[in-house]
Length: 329
Image (cartoon, rainbow, N blue to C red):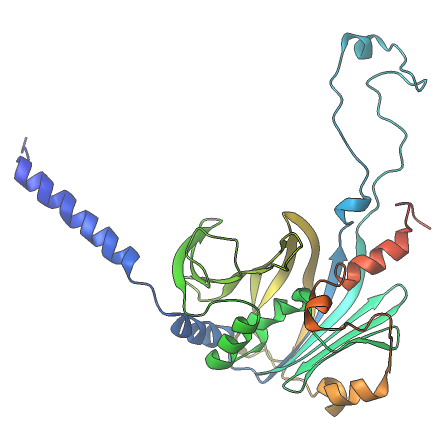
């Protein structure tokens, strides 16, 4: 049996160490990663997606479910103070079921977006273009700013690396920082943070496919606790044009929103249309601002107050649907 000398073993270990170090040391710059990400999603001019939007009950309206330890009394069926057998499940109102909504998103690449969601109380509309943003709810203009929940579209809409870098910077992502990280068994470029730091805004782009898989939006406002939001992109689909010809365009079949560790909503693609013809007014932000009467009590005084204006609109609609006491109306 051949035995390695001490010098050979040391040299071998040094070689593998240097190789591993070199592989970790070189990370593509953010601009190049974003250019490859834009290319990986495809060359389409427009995309319309019909969605099912599921909104989960906010934690503050879910009943407490503290586990009660089992005792000998519970096993023998001895009744507790409330008249029921100790250890039996209480007859409390079950937690509210998730709210399922119909929605759609429209992309006119590289920089125009429209979202429509049918709430129980009416229609919610968001339009975004280079002219700004307009948000309408129940036929009232409620905002001229995007909130952090609207930023899920950033990696999917802006099909120009420099434009996307600018948008990410506005979302708080440091585009001069890029590292290599690992999440759910996948290697990814982390734009905006040094892995494993997850306390700052950052975009994760899978290393093999160059598709976005994770977008962490973290906003810190003086005097308030940190409000964390994570958007996860999964189940990426290859899309076809109407004649069945395959093109190099991809879109996530599922988009999941997680806030402070709690899943709050999920979008699932139901159907889609490639390169559709959009009505001219679809992305006309200025027209929307003129067409709808403002809702004074909902209009923000500044962008910061808009960002922290309660929870997502779907949460507010969810609370209205089930009532303030957590019971269905």
